[in-house]
Length: 310
Image (tube, rainbow, N blue to C red):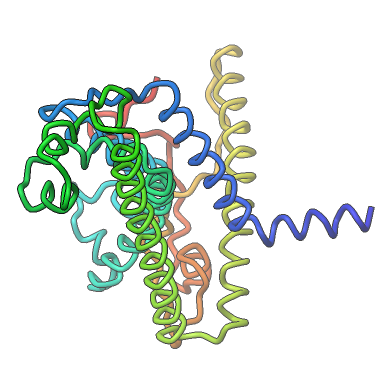
C-alpha cells in the first residue's frame, strides 16, 4: 500500500510533465495521420502555397482555440465581464488581469507550438508550401546554378511527377527539408528560451519565497478538488430537496445557500498581498470580519439575464 501511495504521489507531482508528454505524443501521432492519410499536395503553382500553409497553420490555430476554450481560468476571468467590466480590474488592478490572460494565452500556445515543431521537423507541409512560391528571389535561391526547367518544374518537386532528373529533384527536396527542420529547431529553441526567461522573471518578481509559492500551488489544487467534491455533494442535496418537495407536494425545506454576492466575491481574480496573506479569494471571503451571512432565499438563477441550462 505504501508503494502504491509513493507511485501515486510521484504521478501527482509530475502531472504537468506527464500531461505535456502525452500532448506531444498526440501531436506527433496527429501529424503523421495528417501526412499519410489526408495530405495530398496538388503540385501546381496556384495551389501549393495555400494548401501547404493551411495544413501547417490550420491545426495550430484550431489547437490554440481549443486551448483557450477549455481553459477554466479564462472563463473564470471573463464570465460576466460584459455586464460588469470592473470584474476585470478587481481593486483597480487591471494589470493583474492582463498578466493572468497572458499566462492563460501562453499555456494555450503549448499545443500549437508542438504541432508547428513536429510538422516542420517532418517537412512535408513546408515542402508543398514553399514549392508554390512565385517570388523571384525565392525561386532564384532554389534554382541557383540550375537549368530553366527547374523554375518550371519547382511546383512538381514534392510529387513524383517532376520532369527534373532524380538527382536534381532529390537535391531540391533535401533543401526544402533542411530549411523546414531549421525553422522547427529555431521555434523549439526560441520557445524554450522564452519559457526560461518567463519563469525566471516570474520567480524573480514573486512576493513570496519558493517554499511558500509551492505551498500556494498545492493549496489551490486541493481547494479546487475539495470545491468540486462539495459542489457535487450540495448539488445532490439540493436536487433531492427539490424532488422531495415536488413529488410530496409540499413546501421545500430551508436550504442554506451562499448569496449571489458571495459567489461573485469568491469568483473574482485573486491577487496576493503581503498585508493580508490569503491564498485564494475563498479564504479572503470566509475570514472577513464583515462577512454577510444572509443566505440566498431561493437558490435559483435569474434566467432573464442569466444562462438557461437544459
